[in-house]
Length: 245
Picture 1 (cartoon, rainbow, N blue to C red):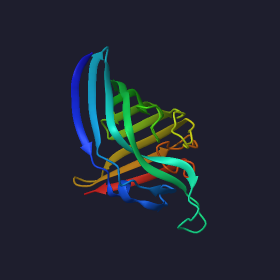
Picture 2: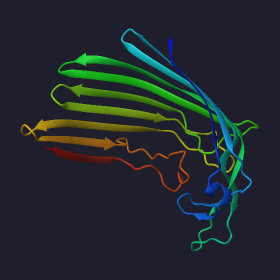
Picture 3: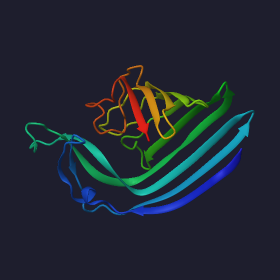
């Protein structure tokens, strides 16, 4: 396996005005957010390594990364509630902007193969991504993305017929911060079929049929502030048409 790319970076980010001075209800996050005007600059040192190889018709790509961040700024849920809500009688949990040293590390792996089939080509791919995000003094960083396994079949026909089947296996996330809910895993299946029809020398009609979350799973995005209140959409089936001229 050969090293394709090596990335080294060192960056700084000043705290935003919201992180410094906010003090009030934020309905989009369902939190009463409180800033801290003593926050200092974040400093991050990052390294990324990408390897790839080809063997027996398979293409393999592996990316490794590690980000060490000094004074990482994050929104910490306190478990306490605002007793004087700004909107009606809705009491929102208080969340404070804080900072401490943190490390993000993980990998992305993809294995794929292209196969010539009758009147087209089929690309099959298998992927997995993982991130571990912890504070250097212990504890998990809030809203860390869970591990994902990805499988897809993508057919491209010489006659303009294309289809895609994509299955995401999202694992449960139990590595949670204080006062944060764990989320269950789920499988997310998407299907798309499209074809272009040439109506004249200048006009082309593209028609596609799609189905999202075909298994109709109850799914929650762990990185969302409102994952408990607002799950991801259920099964969605539709058709689209586009005329180009």
